[in-house]
Structure formats: C-alpha cells, structure tokens
Amino acid sequence: SNNTININLRSIQAFLNWLEKEKFILEAPKIEQVKVDTPLPKFLTPAELDKIYSFTSDEKLLATFRVYEGLGLRLNELQHAELEGDFIKINAKDSKGRRDRIIPLPDDIKEDFAIATQEPYRTDYVSKTFTKLAKKAGITRTLHSLRHTFALRTLMQTKDLNMVKELLGHSQISTTMIYTKFPKDYLKTVLMDNMSDKKLKATA
Image (tube, rainbow, N blue to C red; front, side, top):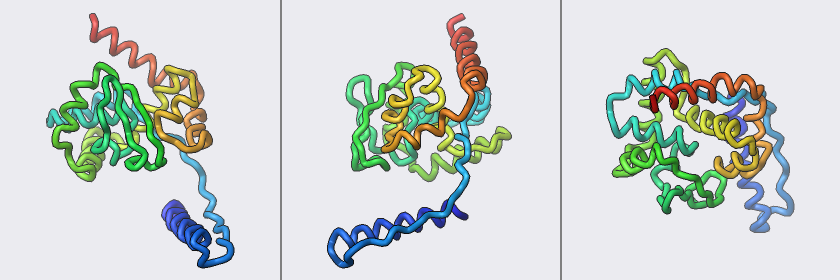
C-alpha cells in the first residue's frame, strides 16, 4: 500500500540523513513520499464502546481497554507508563514522538490503571483481542480507535487543540488538526450528549 511505501521511504530518508551527518556523503537527497489521502479519525461512540465492552469477560482486559480509552495512549506506551500522583508520565524514550508527556489520570479509571499495569498483557494480545471483540460486536475498529476517541472527546471538552496535541504527544500541530475536520455539532451529538446521558443514569 502507499502507506507502507511511505514508511519505508521515511526509513531510507533517515538513513541518508545519518550518512550526511556522519560525513559519509556530502548531502542527503530528499525523497518525495507518495501522496495519500488523509482519512478521518476512526472513533467509537459510547454505544459502540458499551457493545464491545459487553463482550469482554476478562476483567483485566476490560480494565486495559478502558485505560487506552481514558488516556489516549499508543499501543506500546501502557507498559512504560509511570504513575506520579494523579498523573501518568510517558518518558521520551518510550514515546513515538520522543518527548516526555504528562497525562491526567481520571478518577474513574484509577482502579483500571492499577489492574492493567499489574503484569500487563502483551501488546499484540491486547490489540488482536480488541479487534476480534469489535468484530464480534459488528464493529470494524482497531485498538487505535480508542486513541482517536480520546482525542475527539478531549477536543470537545476543552476546545483547546494545543492541549490535545500535548496529551497525544504529537510533535506537529498539523498532525493534531485532523481532529478538527469533524463538525462540532456532529461530535457533540455522537460523543458528548450520549456521555452526559450515561452519567445521569449512573447517578440516578
């Protein structure tokens, strides 16, 4: 696919840049990547999340899914996440963006975080199982959709794109701006209103 081609091209470019830095070549040629259309983020509505979670009988696995949803972590970051008071710290060496970042830990997933990080499941198992459970629920989504869901929900709650950028660990604001392509009224309808209804039912 074009995306796979671009991943390989970026690796080649990084190698050429290293050759230039180490003075094995005078100047690294610039490799142009294949142009691809940027798809909209694939998020999950509260109803879809409830449906997937209803098929998850393993308490630890369910806690793990909720942590990914509540913190917007990349797949490999949970195993390296450090608890510091009411915050989660991701060190630069364990982050794709190579930047330290701090994420608030919501009260409602503190117990989930403790369960998920006690001898955590292998990342490939978590990812594959989520995809299987989503398919069982009639939903075509991967674990990464929980990160998209977190990003869109946070953007709606804070209306602060820069904050979303920092929480996700993006190096460029242009990467985060993909989340602004959805109309706000649409996001409010599919993400926020349903969440409010659930909270009201939970406290009733």
